[in-house]
Length: 159
Image: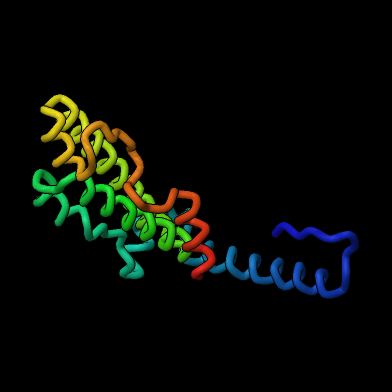
């Protein structure tokens, strides 16, 4: 047992003696029954599955089916909503789920870059139609949306 204090008190002495008494009883029990104590090894996902709070990302299956048909503005909106959901999950201490959402956002960023690259190689009028904006507008931020920092602070203020 590890304890931190400036001085040893009577309550601490009682706690230490009780711990020693229980440890001795456990060692006797283990020896009588031939038990060798072992440290358990479980990952976060094992615990999440046990509790029934799996880190399933709902958008991934739906997006993969329709990914080819999504426009750049649709992908940008999806990224914003996934990012907001990721921050909410992290605040709720659902880190495994937040990490999967982060990975999904990274996939969307790659897909968005691919779409923008293919739009840039086509005619200016086609690029504008695919990008959802005027020709020559090459801004990579979602149009009309708040920046990441503003979204994060707005989300924190709401909760």
